[in-house]
Amino acid sequence: MAWWEGVKECRLLIASDPGATGNGVGRFLSLRHPKSGKTACYLFVNGLLQELHWFKQSYGSWFVGDYVCEDGRLYTATPVDPVFIMLPIFEEARMKKEDDPGKFRQLDEIIFIHDYPGYQHLLSIAENSMQVVCEIKEIGSSKFFRLDDSKVLAWLYHKVCELKETLSVLDKNYAARQEKDTLADAVSILGEYVKDEPWLNLLCNHLKLNSVEATKEALEVENLSPASGSHPVFQSNLLGKGSDQKSTKTGKPAKKAKVETESRNIKEMFSRASRRRN
Image (cartoon, rainbow, N blue to C red; front, side):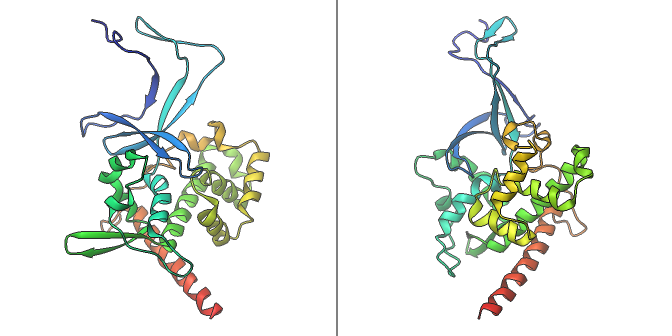
């Protein structure tokens, strides 16, 4: 019996190698897009979360062995940092009000989203992923999480800095540009995964950049829209976990150490601003 017998529809998907660990069985998850909030499809395999993209010419099919796949679309799955995907639901879960930082809640409460059971499959990676942007309290054997503004801003700043450096390496045109212009492009690309309010606006204020809309317009003028899929950032894992997990001398991941340092600096900045208001 041929492999395609009994298959109703066939698709061609190019995805990252799940590695030697785990059973290699993937699962498609319907989750909310972190920017638009609309339903989007993701691939989750061996603890690696990947987002799906597709491309289709006007006419085309695929020959897979002796089988003709009528759907000529090419699907690709690229790694994405799960913090981007879970950030909006952690923001909602804390129920922040004005100066009240919100509530601490357990992970199974936070990722229980009505009509989106796919989030339940992320429970295995939620703790390790979200500790970089959350305050954590332990009561007995239970852990409670609450999103921390200063940690989120520090994490976004770290991502932007990495992205800015990567753009300069992947595209020589960036090397000849002013640093602030490259920084604005990096923020705009990041903005495809983060809501303008509050995070992107806070990031722009922290970096002393113009408004979010201004940086987006600058990016579109130069035909570097990340939605095209041809932008050099899509040729790297930067918006995913990438290769930033080098260890420091203390044994902590380098990324986490940098984010924690920046978080302390941002907390001091918030504290000074608060004293000035009072």
